[in-house]
Structure formats: structure tokens, C-alpha cells
Length: 297
Image 1: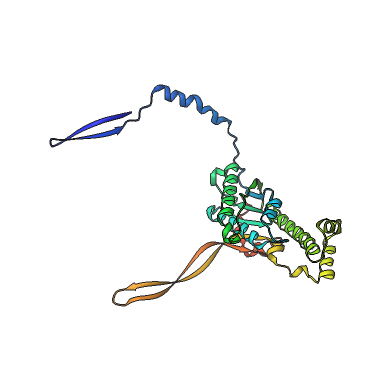
Image 2: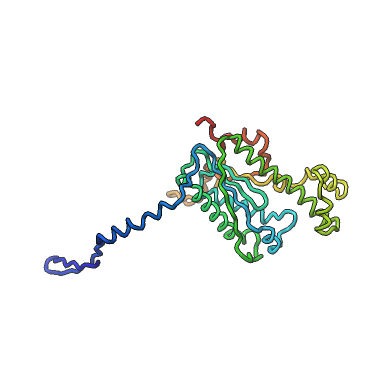
């Protein structure tokens, strides 16, 4: 409701329009009447004292990679863009203590004690998925230059809880082992196609039933490729963690009667850093002991 207020200031009449908010009995009743629908919402609060893992996977990325002419077997542009998008998520959600990615997937680990979004699984998953997807589009040109993005990519997500440090380490070990298996297969497969002259069907038939040792032998004996010398970026995937880094910068400072002078400024801050290293063994976890929280609750 709008009301007109007249105020007399020493004979000068000023009119002010005030917005009067009035609530009738019927509107209050209406609010109560319809508010019951909130009871249909699912209580999806994640169990306490568990690490919350949100894993994203590209949807139909086989088709997406073909239509965007990804380099086989590994396109460093695409892998770099995935890592950049993941870093954007971590920088937005500092309760993510570690993230691991390979191919078209990325896993984000929220610390066991997080209370972000009241630990609601739907909130955590949708925020991570939307932030990652929008970052993938936003940073596309930074990695692919003038190559156009033909249509928006999409990612599906899931939430899994891990109660102990061993469970979480085994999960991440599983994903890195999967990276190794897939990369060895893809490296051998595309070498047979690109250098061996086989069709994709013939290469698939050649590798059917082979073990890791067989694939290594094909690469070495037929193409003089030592798989051990392949890039760790491709073999081990990408691990993102928070680390304290020291940065040095030079600034121009004006001082009285002295004019401008250069001053070196050093500061230490937390930053998301990228690693392509082994996370299955103990060394990584010993060097970065602050990633895991105590199992003593």
C-alpha cells in the first residue's frame, strides 16, 4: 500500500511517499497453507565424520571429442582445460582438500569436517558440477584458441562417502590405477592405428585378451616405444592440492624527496598446485600429511 506523508518544515510543505507493507490475515493464512510442500524435500545431509567425494564424468565425451577433433590418444589441450576447470572449483570451495582427474573425469574430496551447505549432497554435487561445466566453457578459448566450441559439454555427478583415510586413499588409488590401464590401452591402440596402419577394428581385435605386458611388448618390439618413458601427465593423471607457496614481486613505490623506487615484496599464501605423481604409494601422503584428517573422531 502507498501512503502520502506531508511534513511541515517552517512553513515549507514536503510530501513524501511511503511504502506501507501490510499483511492481511488471508495472506498469512495462504503462506501457512502452501508451506507444507517443503516437507516433500529429501533430507540428503551427508553422514558426519566421512570424506565427501563428488565425482564428475563427461557425458557422451566420446562423441564430443570426435566432433572437436581431439588429438589421439591424449589431447593435452583438453586435459589442461579439465585441470583448469577443476582448479576453478577448488578455488571457489576451499573445503576441497584434494582433487584427482584423468581423461574426462574429476573427483573432488571435501574434508571430513566440512559443514559447507550443511553437508547436503544435492547442494554439493550441483555446485561442483555447475562450477566445473561453466569453467570448461569459460576457459575453452584459453586452451583451444580459435577452434570453436560447437555445443555445450555436460557432466554428470555423484556423491560417495568414505569414512576412513584408508577408504579414501584406496578410492583415489583405484582411479589412478584406472588411468594407467586406460592410457596403456589407448597408447597401444592408437599407435597400431597411426603408425601400424591398422583400422580401428583391426587394432581392437589385435588387443583383445592382451595383458599389460603384451601391450608393453607391442609398443617396444614393433614401434621402439618404451611406455615407461611416456609422460607422467598421461600415465598418472592430475592431482590438485593446496600448498603454501612463496611469491616474489617487484613494486614501484613513491617516497618523499626520493622519487620512485623499486621494492621487492615477498609473501606466502595458499595456492592450488598441480601434480602428476604416484598417489598409490605412501610417499605422496607422507609429504602432504595435512590433506588427511585424523581417523580419531
